[in-house]
Length: 424
Ligand code: SUG
Image (cartoon, rainbow, N blue to C red):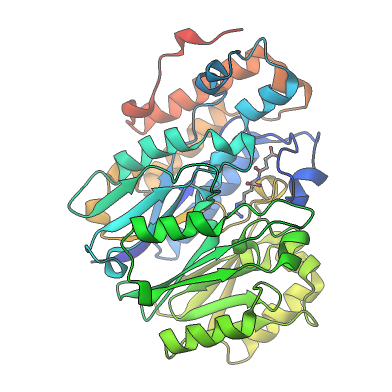
């Protein structure tokens, strides 16, 4: 049976605040602060556990190997010789934001009946541009069953692709054919537009989508300028519901009209700027919630604590739930460590509609497996990382060893590497 599985990126041991993401206001604001990798990973695991307890299938991805010495080697250097900026770029734990791992088109949407995944190239940001090789290797393991999945290498540079963070799907239910929406940005503002239309169009072709059920929509320049570096910071879709800020899309009226035409029964839940400003929406990550369908059939939002702490946002949500809107429940989680780098509940997960029996079980979560991961994180993840620690060979070594221990615990020997080559 085809169901939605949320694969969360386990937060890696190198999680830190090096301020690497221009246009991501949280990343810039928290530059230089002391990070808490252990807490970060435990916060993410707690969200996974809570979703599992709600009856939602849960998957996981392991952090990538960091520092990425192979990338530095390609740049003609190594960790102990690189400058501080390259060191930070090689060390980033940014693969935790699994929404940027790939774009996923479930089998009911594609002409060949396969579930297609294209790994995102993430070329706009240096620290993210070297994620794709290891992500590809991991997705090819998790979705190795070629009778059901096709996993593609990224579209080539210079066309920037940021994966599912700029992709939405509307459908009667997850197993039914859907409308796939690709949201791209255009340059010209103070911050880079990370998703290029050419990349979205390429992904739609590679995934063999029906052109009549594929929509390309432009993200509003205002949203990018306000810090919505990905569309999933201002909009989220689930089944027949699109939940979006009034200022999310460039040509909103035409876009909504197209959706009504293509999916009669679509429910557009729009939050007006007069109720919640773009600034409050972005600071609270209201739209970076996971919009999920519970086993009861009711929809719920899985939100970060910041949404409850932002009065206009919480008032809007409470009024919606008290009224007759499609969102019936709110679940709030403390994801402060990831949030401080601009990653909310929805950034931390990649949605895949599939039969769990066709997925490599090592990537599926159970309460017992989450217990084991939690114990390992408590034993091996650094408690904190300061700006100075980024240049510490001892930290690099400890982080590599911590990740190796996790891969061994999950019996993912294919993702382990020999540590002998670490310099410094
Ligand atoms: O790409 N932050 C990530 C956050 C990604 C959020 N994902 C989604 N919205 N789906 C980014 O900007 C900060 C890293 C640093 O500064 O070290 C960072 O990469």
